[in-house]
Length: 422
Image 1: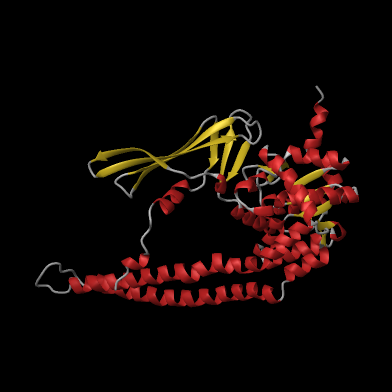
Image 2: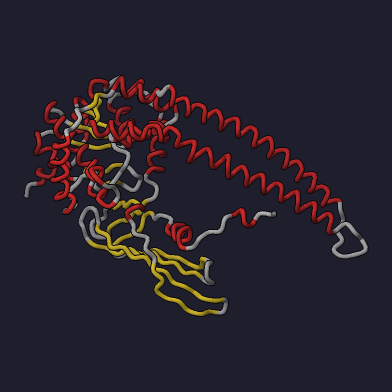
């Protein structure tokens, strides 16, 4: 036995310092796109303090540039559509509806209890007091809505300003070099190799086989091949920054940080030109830059980045293998969610239905098989009664909202407008 033979797959403090001395720092599309979600002050600090220190070592493959530019404009407006519009168009309406109902119902109670000659009759003093309180709520809600809209408009205007003056794109153009574009024949050679690699789940990118089409299926492999080629030309180590944390690239811990790249990638990179390859997500990268480049960056800003990455990867199943003790993380998108009604019975209030979804999984580390079960009982029909999740040879650390998914997709939910007063 030679335990040193496994050292190439591990990162100790000495190797990490060596990496940061001269490595090419390469960004994935996800790491570039997520800059649009970081607070303005946070991303500017990265540009000013980290990019300036590593300016001649920042690089992206041509395919990453292509994907970034293709998605950039849609990403700029995404926070408005996904984050601010729901507040303006849904949540404020709900608050207004609730305060109107409070006033309306309290006034109706007064009307119903006003006449002493018939029931219900109640003393009016407390009711009048509450009506005045409800009117005050109405005024407060109107002011709250007005103030909130002003603040939302400020944020939206700042976001929209990036369309005319994209300071993020300018920072990338000033600091990050881009690799050459591959020819069609070069891409076809990668596609041909990719078919064999994906058949046997050799990373990176094999998870895209079921999610994408055309040459985009092999986008991650194209990026990987460009990284290998560039690193070989430069004869340098590589640090790869990626926020889209998938099992066909890396292993993760339960806090959505990269534990290590896949061993296959480390070996392929090392075999290619006897250099080191490692991966970080963006928050890990900033933290390590603060530590190893001795930069003054507030921990709160690193935490902001970490939260954004967690939001990107939040819909996941995480389970700890009883055999090897490691945590496997699986994106919700890779679960089949095919629920089958396995049992029905008549009860006092109607039918009780038992639904089951089963998924065969493999530990990302020791490859031992396990079976996952999501179970839901409805009783009576259309009413959630009970649910449970179970897994063989493992322990669930985090579960996606399979119950919410089931009810959102199992029945058609009537339009809420149907219930509003005409």
